[in-house]
Image (cartoon, rainbow over all chains, first blue to last red; front, side, top):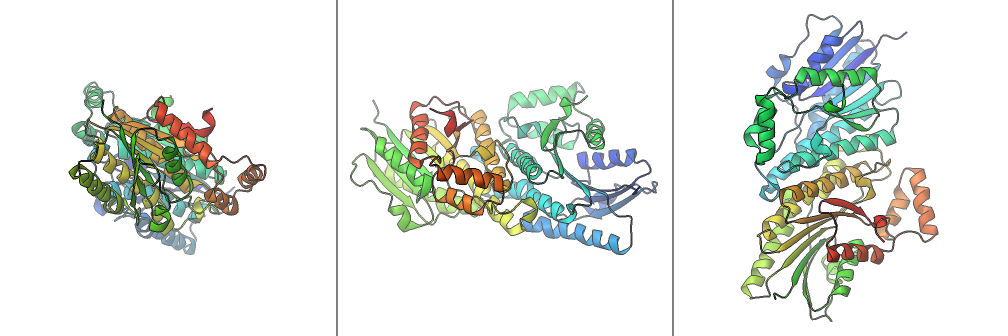
Length: 264
Length: 264
């Protein structure tokens, strides 16, 4: 039987939930090979995520990821993954049996604003980073790995906002909705590709703190503040574990949107 | 009582469904003032849509609309609408009581392709045209008209694809889903703004012919071809009339997605 060799490509892996996902996956490794390709902007932050004491894990870093547009994402990330894979093949590394893209990178947009407040350049920047680059990553991943020999999975780190609208989240909700839909179509086109949009819940992390500090809508702000004060925000490790479990059990409906709170 | 003066801004108005919408609205005018601002790329095509024989209607054209990005949409369309409105005010024209933005402009993307076939530049171009520019138009419209004195309505010409995924429509579905979601958030932020995502049905027009000629998925291709052969595609005037009726009766749920086939 072929030894399993799973490649996990995780974007925004240098901190927050992306980092928590990598650490959770690493903690579960069991006699199978794992290669991480961790993608982020900051090299030193990125390289602080490492698993040197585990002989089953190798870790590669793609720093200076540029998600300012489709071409930028391809050149700064996909082309580099492609080179990495080619180098592995030449060095006769164990063949890849599974490839998982976890698209976690993203931004919230300016949550103090409503749609009438945006200016053109922030709209352009937001969409380039959160939608255009994301599509480019998904396309690039499919081109690289969907060759009939590798089990491929694409995970979009999504949000409740992808399916329910709230004030002050227009760019974010628009982006998450677009991202979910892209994977639904991929699933229809390529039934062999497993796709999942996973909403991790309101995580107890820097991003959530930023949300509480900047959100213009008072009702939501109070809700999140109350959750934070009462310790009811979701621990990143718990949420990452549920995502890992979903992927490991492989029972989720491909193309679906699954929320942390849906799972027990 | 104030005389009603409705401004309709229609993008992609030079042909197809955009033109049909303008003609339908014009055919219903009844003792109220209508100002059209018709937006498109081709000046001569655009100016062929005219209603000179109706004293209640004035028609303005914004040609050379550039939807290659947020800034481009603002400069080539929104800034020009702003100048137009200022000129009206200076000339003491009847004050605007209602403003309706009908965001019809858009493209299908290359329907012969699946997600793994896209190249970075077509992803960038598609998103810029169909999402980024669209958000910029909505933001610009709100800035111009949402002043508490004017009844404002934003219509997104949507699609079944915004809510149901089919193969070979990834860019289109992603775009339509994003567009629907943006309006849902606008509705939550500004309850006074009426928003509607209207799916016009499979229209009997050039775009549908192009779909039948280029669609890579054979099952859908056969379905559309059968509909065309049997005369079951939707007449543009019928669909435009239903949209007009929705807007005139003003009973739709703001933020909702309404399909031609939902209506009788």
